[in-house]
Image (cartoon, rainbow, N blue to C red; front, side, top):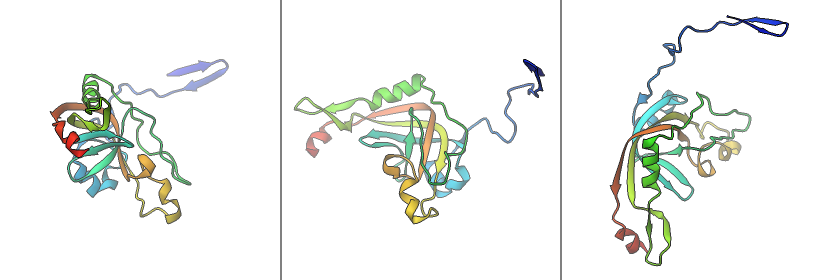
Length: 186
């Protein structure tokens, strides 16, 4: 294709189709949190799909499977500071705020109301499990020079070495939590 911009002429090669090349798989890798954390370098920067519980709370946004947890970056700018480093590698991720995403956020936003009438921000009424698809990012704090370790990572105070930058959720299942457990905790 030939493009003219004033006196400037450029020849541009344009692909005939938008089909991804074989080196760029169109499907995310189906795996588990356990597998991600067992071999994080294998998945770093790649699109993955995991089934896990979602937890949103005070200074936390996590994917959990009972034994493992990683930071969940969902719906806001992803930043990571690494002295002398760069932004996370991999494709940019755009969150799909479709019906399944809205269903997940609706369940996560339902909180127990205490007897005094105030909402308890740490008392969800549902345990929400989803198939989460997104880009897996990992940093190795041990391989980072000690004076820089507090600056690498994800989430609150860079407390996590791994995160999933959420692209979409599917198969949302919400299980009710008995609210009486929160009254007993007080």
